[in-house]
Image 1 (cartoon, rainbow, N blue to C red):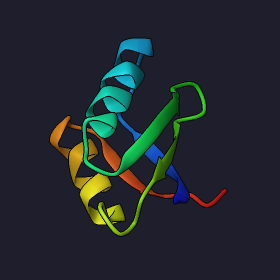
Image 2: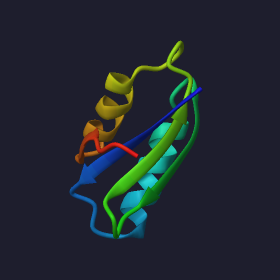
Image 3: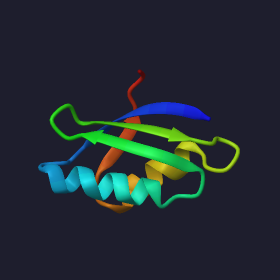
Length: 72
């Protein structure tokens, strides 16, 4: 398992964070996603043998937000 913190831009409310978490947790290999809208950060626990960081970023982008690695 790996953990990545993403900077997610474009979120405006708690519902945005819930949408991001739901979309990421639907991806194969993602164990959990926890989004803090106020800090514009999403912490994702995932299996890199199943899902890549590019897959995770793409899922966020498909919701209309922008995601990039933010570090821990």
